[in-house]
Image (cartoon, rainbow, N blue to C red; front, side, top):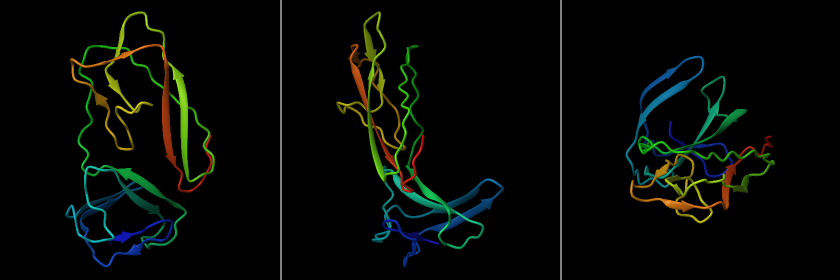
Length: 176
């Protein structure tokens, strides 16, 4: 069935049933649905399928009834996602930025951190990138990595690098 919700509420049955179930299977760990739908249904309660990220809501319960389940959430999916690029250039050093974050019980959290780059013994160039403070490339849920063309790079110095993470915490639970 085609349902929709706007905000924190139990989803309503959509008057226009635009999804067609092609197949369904279930085992002890997964439920899989294969569906089809036109990209733009012209239904105000449907989001057109595009290259943007779409948020799907899900709920797990002992029955197939649409009720308030304790296990529920959302998944951000790029429906038209193609395979992510893979670095095919020369061997290079990788600098990983890992952020340990204690998340408060808020709806949306913006978490900014500063990281000093590792020391460089030789001239260094950025060949690929995630999100930067000076936005030349942004990454979001379902985003692919960015690799510059072979003849392009950005010079790196030993400066601070800033990261910003955005956490959507629909259940408003705290995490450590």
